[in-house]
Image (cartoon, rainbow, N blue to C red; front, side, top):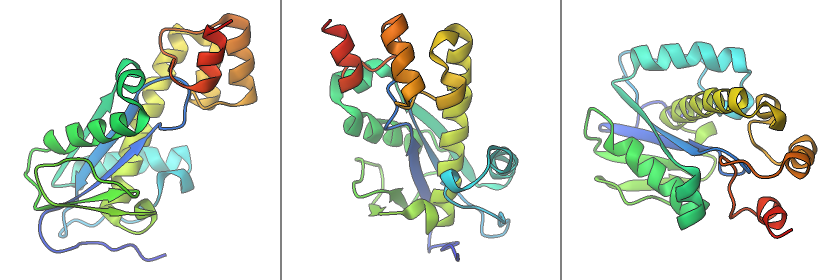
Length: 195
């Protein structure tokens, strides 16, 4: 696969991780890559092993011109819905960059309101290097956060499913009830609250 490496101008790639889980925040990242310092092996974070992602994170943080990670909380997800929370996390990530981008390339089919022009690219994490880099940062940061939540709430098995609605997670929810880090607006969690 050949990724689009360096579009014209100071372009940031933006992606999020954690729209589908029943628990934890949604995390977004924005990355401006350095054309003079390319990173080999960037791809959609879901297509890389955890070990490969961990190695790439170190390289992205060292070589990118700018990078930032931000999130929207479980409370924000429940209050404004996951789509709006994802847009908010992306907006926060772009705003946190040390450099002002001339353009943003967003993974998906919608763009958040940003300080620069933005373009949505469906499947962008497999097409544009900076979006791939953002997807890797967002996923690794979110996974690390879920491991921290696992230490507090080990009964849910967050270390195995990162909050996604697996059979194991749903069973744990039924046995232990809803924790403060679960998304109450999501149907499987909302149903348990109605019991």
